[in-house]
Image 1 (tube, one colour):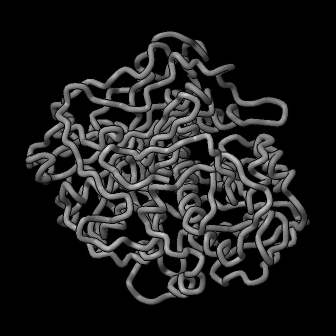
Image 2 (image 1 turned 135 degrees about the vertical axis):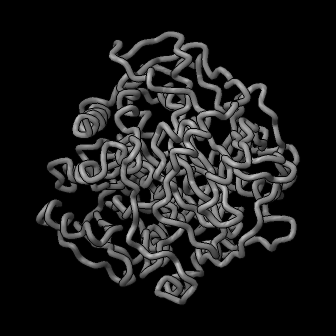
Image 3 (image 1 turned 30 degrees about the vertical axis):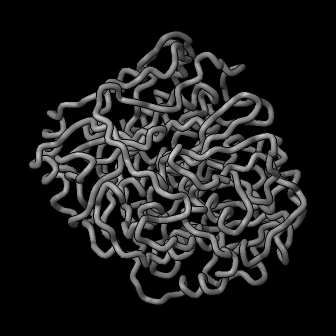
Amino acid sequence: MEAAEIASVIKYHEATKHSLTRYARGPRGLDWINQPDPFRRYQGAQLAPLDHLPPDEQGKEDTPLSYPSVFKLAVAPRPVTKRTLSQLLYDSLALSAWKSAGGSTWSLRVNPSSGNLHPTEGYIISGPVTGVCDSPFIAHYAPKEHALEIRAQMPPSTWKELSMDFPPGSFFVGLSSIFWREAWKYGERAFRYCNHDVGHAIGTVAIAAATLGWKTKLVDSWSSSDLRLLLGLPRDDASASDSSDVAKGHFPELENEHGDCVMLLFPSDKAVPSNWSPSTELVCQLSKLAWNGKPNSLSREHVRWEIIYRAAQAAKKPALAESLSTGCMEASREQTSRETCFRQFASSYGRATIRHVVRTRRSAVSMDGQYGMQRDAFYQILLKTMPCLGTHKQLPFSSLPWEAEVSMALFVHRVAEMKQGLYLLVRNPLHEEDYRADLRQDFVWEKPAGCPSELPLYLLARGDCRSIAERLSCHQDIAGDGCFSLGMVARFEDSLKEHGAWMYPRLFWEAGLLGQLLYLEAHAVGISATGIGCYFDDSVHQVLGIKDRKFQSLYHFTIGVPVLDTRISSLPAYPSTKSKTN
């Protein structure tokens, strides 16, 4: 059965590749009448409003945190209160601004999303919190209202069973996806983009948690069916069928949420077990919870792209599946080479605060094609994308319980003192030998000048590759107009064979998490970035010399100096926010 499931996700992956001769199937035009509502609400559930925080402060009693300080894990843990929950969500999954132009108005969020469609929904699973709920609870986050919808109250015995192996002050954040929101615009490729967005959201939650002195760990031992019970989601087994491949009509089941993952948030000065899994007794108790609220309708009509639901079904994590683990040691407070790297390039960040960076981050829509960036800033960004430096697993990659599977092929266009050309950053040193064996044999594999010893970055081929980068990213100028662009390349087929088909979405989560870090790093050094989901998969592989499925390109990105559209005006995310939003 496992082989059949792996074959199913590979079939999805191959069928949804863009190429120079054809694009993956999607709608021929946008059905604006049926554009999905970007805000899920559970009508009838109790609404617990959260605090609105000043845009430029971390909290009422705190000094604003500088952007680089958060990555040094130096923040003292805060208690779980209404205020700190408000801050966590305000800096991770909340609205960041309202934009308007030409009579249209739309919202932006702290967590980026393909096409600003936001398929990702967030949940809090916690013990009692004064001002939110007097008993242990499971709540859905409503970003438009910045409030929690209390979906279920847990008996104290259930919360004790769920939390007893974790330190006091721990709680959980759950994530789910509504595939229809992405499929409305992108058709068959939507499953890829939804999983990118899960990775983005893992990153925003992990970094917001760090500002409160909390660490984040993906508790990946939940099976998909048990996770559905924890988040109170309807069964979605019926979503995958043998009906016609594409159909239009009223399919309300397509608006169901697909449970993705749950993260443990806990005080940074505490340790947590690495092999925890939910007990049979806990799962039984969760199955008996009473759920409040009925999900709102998002569209009157839908287009059913059957291939998405077959892939999602194959990629579900079964009960008794292995728990992933990482060999990179937990971060300590000792001075290491990582601190040396921070000191070396500290000037790149200026005086950026973490809240300013996370809440004013935007996806660039075009780059100027003229200005470049300094080499030190370039190296600092790449250093931060490494999952480990020395014995430290870096934020936000410390959230993931598996070894890095994603590396980056970089097209360097305008970086001072750097040769133009194609480079490779090998994010997992165990993969370097395979890359050297599998990529084109005429690559030079040169270490660039001034490159930190901790950074496994190699020049593969010299030359102006702006036109190649544009062509590979579906002929988009933005890939050549930035300072550099990149393709995220994952160890693919072997990863699926070693773990199972359920590893498929996790490869995209890692790519999305990496993308979120690139977004923030670019903004922190004064430029901008954007993710590129449209690229010609096998043409990328051809440039690199990849001939099989050992490695696959999963996400593209570009970083550079943005061109701002002055026709678009901006308003604060929430009425109580008085400071100007950029």
